[in-house]
Image (tube, rainbow over all chains, first blue to last red; front, side, top):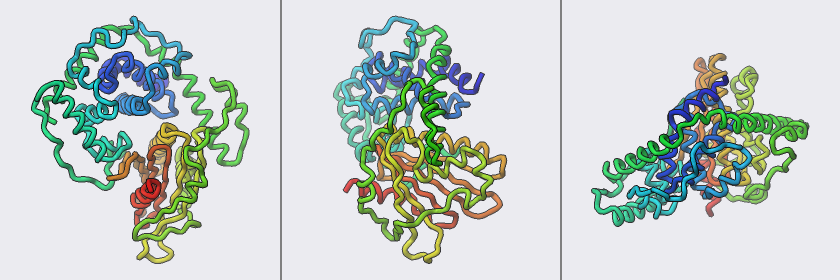
Length: 181
Length: 260
């Protein structure tokens, strides 16, 4: 067994459900989230990259999920692109939004994709504003605007949960994001 | 934002994770492997084909027709035409740009031994933004950048640009650079060279990049390659050992000029 196969097996067994939860916050609905994860795993492991560490593989998959989301690949397009892959679900496909009653996700779903992405990167992955901007390929000013608008909407929808304004940050000229390897 | 929102988000993430885990108890690794294995093989073949093209070899047909797509696909057109890149008026404050200059290759600096490692040899290819013809566009040499106050024969920063077919293609190219650099780092350690790879961004400049330093612990200075991608465009800067490192300034200047 090659290294990537072992990492894939571990990732599917131990990390995939968490990745689906992550994608669910980003996408706002289950079918899209599951498609994003499915496609991101295949894309990540299909690349001629040495994947011998499950943590790094998971990080790549998360990045790919975000990239796909920001490229506005619809769930239908994702589904079309993978029809030939013959991966079958082992459960029935979820009806869109069926059984989804999570107030936070319902509120997130009402946000544009880029605002959702900013919220998740900033508050789930705990990236700085600069890191969030770099990850999304947009300016820091845009990140701040997206977060401001998103927080205003979430506050309106979910009530005052003690949200505070974004803290000011110093700006680095060149900021290693994962550190040197 | 406070911990309240973070807590709520993590709670939602956790609930969805548990739901998914409860509904998907089957072992699917084999199915994923079935889908991934031919794609990996095809991608490696395509990358090898790209490298051969750079070297002037053109025997691509037999490799590509064995891939899952079953046909030779021409390289997609670049999002920005090469002529437009060449015509872009750009300048680096406090520095001189020599449009005919080039920076030293990795082998020129640390000897031919390092390029015996294929992944390290690829770094010279990627320093010119060459290879991966399947992603569209072609490399455009922009010359060298040196500090205006330095001597004329100072080490330089060599710059290339390339417009890929799409932003996704540009990101894929960056992944390829990252992957080769990581492999080079592992292999070069056996030869006593330090190769470090870091994901880097530039404040107030959109996009993302990879910076690779190749250094000999027994010598001073490092050969540095910085590839930055913004949308469908990429810029690569090679900074020779002992040069004033103007990579970030050059990258920022290039994309500022692009924005008009």
